[in-house]
Amino acid sequence: MNDQPHFDILVVGGGMIGSALALGLSRQGWSVGLVEGSDRKTLLKGSAPVEDVDGFDPRVSAISVASQRLLEQLGVWPDIAAGRHCPYQTMTVWDGDGTGRIQFEAAELRAAALGTIIENRRIVRALFTALADSSVRLIDGARVTGWWQDGNERGIRLEDGCTLAASLVVAADGAHSRMRQWVGLPTREWDYGQQAIVCTVRTTQSHRFTAWQRFSPTGPLAFLPLLTESGDEHFCSIVWSQDTEEARRLMALEDEAFRAELESAIERELGSVEVVSRRYTFPLRQRHAKDYIASGFALVGDAAHTIHPLAGQGANLGYGDVHALL
Image (cartoon, rainbow, N blue to C red; front, side, top):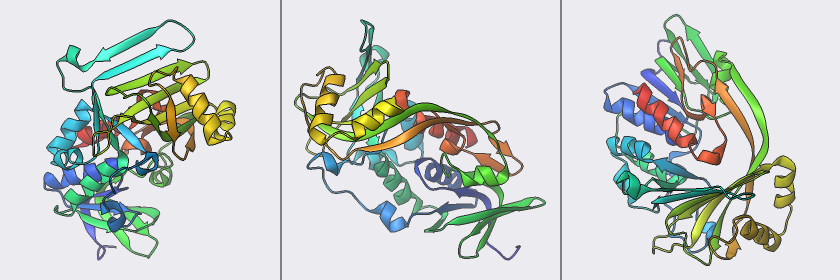
């Protein structure tokens, strides 16, 4: 195996977390390889200006100020900020079945914003643009089929038969991490008994650069503000976490009926919900690796931990991993 490519550090998984880690490690002078299943041309492809609810990526992240600072240090924030993004100055959270209500203001913290809502693909594109000008060796369109270890060396096998070696392998391959399973790091996990419905909506009133969240007995509903290239403030990304049976009922509704339910659930805080995009759903399950490291191996991002989306902290925890490992 000594005649195979060898790296100081090999990162498996080139999503928002893995690509940021690879870029940061390369800036420190390490020899870094990044293995990603998607083709780089797809990841570098720009997005067309938004004209309707279907133009936005359904996957968005609420990037905290701390995560923004990390992306600034990596030199990719200007690229991200040059595209679609929406900083929010206010967060309003309330109990739909009671009188409890709380509001957070960026001004109280003397901050420009509490965070920024960004489409995941926008972040990945900025990171891969920076990677193209870095020393990172990108192995894209590659499927990992196994893990090996021999003394102080370890690495991975690819579907095409190639073997890659490294002193340290970092798994950033998501919640169902095969790397974590192959290495044998156990997890503590349980099912939340809920599913999250994700889509984009247009409302009659402006979102007022506010992140909205209403709690109900069957789960929370979040309206996250989006902004078009032209500055239209009437789009939001929603994450509606509901008990599994209720989520199935909502997903089975026709668009008009779903729109009416959504409008009622948010208590018309943004007026009428005019249009709803295609809906997506995924089960919610908590996973936490009992150990983040083994000999010559580490976990970051969802490979190490997945949590309920109600606080929007999944990506930020991943960037916390990146910061800690760097």
